[in-house]
Image (tube, rainbow, N blue to C red; front, top):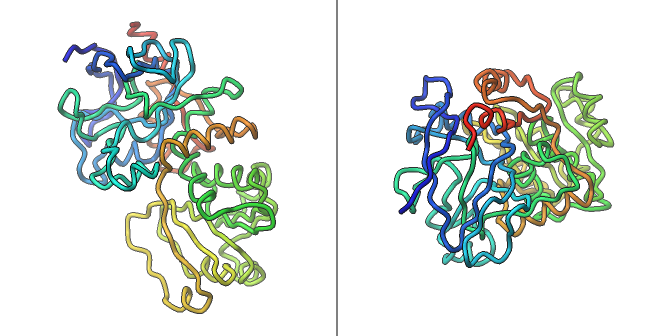
Length: 355
C-alpha cells in the first residue's frame, strides 16, 4: 500500500522522553478522510501508555486520541466530509462492525475489540496505529466526527475523550431536571462532568477532598460543594442523590459515596484506579443501589455529545502547549498541576517540519 511519511512526537521506550519521530500514514483509500491535525489533547492514558504502566505498549508509540483538525483529502466514496471542513477523531479508528455491540452503535464495546487510535493493530499497514501527536491522520469516514466552528478549537479537543467519557454515562442513566447528581473529583474528567450534568438540567453536587477546589467547582457550574473528608457534611447529604459520577483514579472509599445515593441510585466509575476498590455488600443491598462502570461512547453518541456541547457552548478548560513542552506536561500531570487539560498546538511540530 502506498504511504506518506510525516513527523510525529512519541517515544521508543518506557523510560525515554518523547521526541520527534518519523512515521508513515496510509494513502487515502476510497472511504478514508485525511485530516491535518491542528490540536491534540493530552489524556492521562497517553502517559500510562507511553510509560507502559498498563503493560502492553508496543514501541515506538505516538499517543493522542483527542484530535481536531481540518480535512485535506477525501476518498472517492466519502459522502459525509469535504476538503476544508473541521473534523475530529477520538479514541477509536475502527471496529469489527459486525458484532451485536457494533450494530447497536456501541463500537467502544466491540466484542473482538475496537481498533484504538494509537497502540492497536494497524490492519492497513501492519504494526500498530499511531495517534494524534502528529502532523496528520488518515481514518475511515465512519470514525471521523464533525466539529462545530462555533467553539474554540483547542478547547474542543478534550471533548473527544474527557467529554464523551462523562457524557455517555450521564446520558445512559438519564440524568436531567429534577435529579440531584454528585460528581466525585474535579480534574480532567470531573470538570467536564460538572459542565455537562448542569447543562442537562440536574442539580449538581461536587464532592472533593480539597477545600481549595470549592471556588472552581462553583465557577464550573456546581450548585453545591461537599468536602468529602468531613463526616458531618457527608451525613447531611445521605440518601439524597439519584446518580453519582465517580471521576477519581486513585484509591478512595466507595462506600462513603454509595451511602449518598437514594434507593435505586447508581454510582458509575469512569476514573480508573490501578488497584481494586473494596465495596461493602450492605452499601448496595440496603438501598438496591448499583455500582457500575462506563467507558467512552460510540461514534453516533460522540457526535451527539459534540453537537450538545456546541449548542450549550461547552468546552474543556485547557492550557495550550507546544510539542517541546509535552515531557514537562507529563510530569505536571502526575502532580495534578493542570486546570484541567493540556492541549498540544500541532503547529509547533509543523513549524520545524512543514508538509
